[in-house]
Image (cartoon, rainbow, N blue to C red; front, side, top):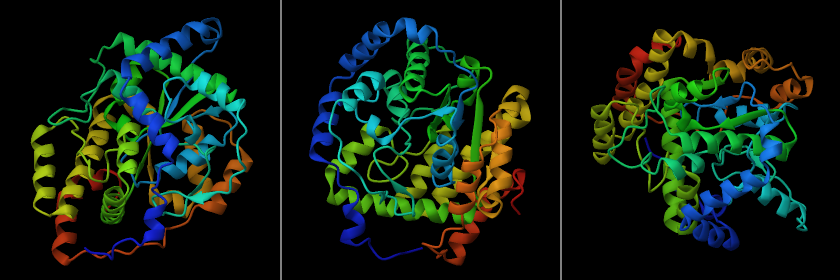
Length: 374
C-alpha cells in the first residue's frame, strides 16, 4: 500500500506555536513540580471539590481512527458532559487555575481549521480533545515504555493517582459548569477493569471499524505523522507530552497483556509488513474487548461497542443508543448535528496488495466475527 508524500500545506498544520513548545518543555521537565501544583490546586478548591459528585463518568476508548474523535465532539456538546479542550494543554494537570488565567487574557477570535490529521474535522482552541493521558503518565511513567504491559485491571492499586484523578475530573466539571465527566482516551481501552473498580457506574463507548478500512486509515495517519514530525521536531515533542504514541516517529504498540503478540507487532513493523502489524494490533485490542464482554458481567454491562459503519449510516439511531447507554437524555441539537456531520470518509481509498489484504483478513478474522464483521 503506497501513497504520495504529503505536501507542504498539509504538513504545515503540524506546526506548534513557539510559546506552547517552550511552556510544554518547562512543564514536562518538572513533573514533580506539576504534581505538587495539582495537589495545591486541589487543597485550594477542597470544599468545592468535595461537594462535586462524580456520577456515571463516560469514557470513549477503542483504537485510534475508529470514529472516537467524532464521538467526542458530538458528546461534548451534550449539556451534561464536561471534557478537556485544546486550550487546556500544556498545563493540563492544573485545569482550574489555567482556565481562570485564560479568562483574564485577551483571546483572539478564531476561525475553525482542519486538524492535523486532515480528516475533515475542523477545530478551534475551544474544541474538545483527548488530554487525559498526561495524568496517567504522571503516575505511571512506564506505560508507553517497552517491554511493558499496558493492561490495568481491578487488581491495580495506586491511591495517589486515584485521588488525583477524582479531583481532576471534579475540576473539569467545575471549569465547564457541567455535572458529568467525559473523556476520549484511546489508551483507556486497556484500563476498563481499573476504571470500573474506581467508578462502578462508569460507561465505556468503544468504537470499532471494519479491519481492512481501519488498518488503511491507521497506515495513512502514521505516514502523515512521520513526515510531519521529521520536518517539525516541535510537533514530535508536543505529541509525546500529550501521550500520543499511536503514530509517528515515536510510535509504540499497545501491549494488551500479551507480550509475545506485542513483540510480533514490533517485528512485523520492522520488517516493513505494516498492514499485518496493524492488523495484529487491531485483533489484540478488540480481542481484549471481546474477552471482557464474555467473561465479566460488570464490564459487559458498562461497555457499548459502536460500529463505525452504523455510526455513519444511521447516525441518529446510533447516537440515541449511545445516549441511552450513558444514561443521558436525548438532545435534539446533538442528534441534528450528528445527521449533518457524519458520513463515510472520501479522502482515501484502499490500496492494499492482494497479499496485504489477505494478511489483514487472516489476522483479524476471529475477533472481527465477534462484532459482526464477515
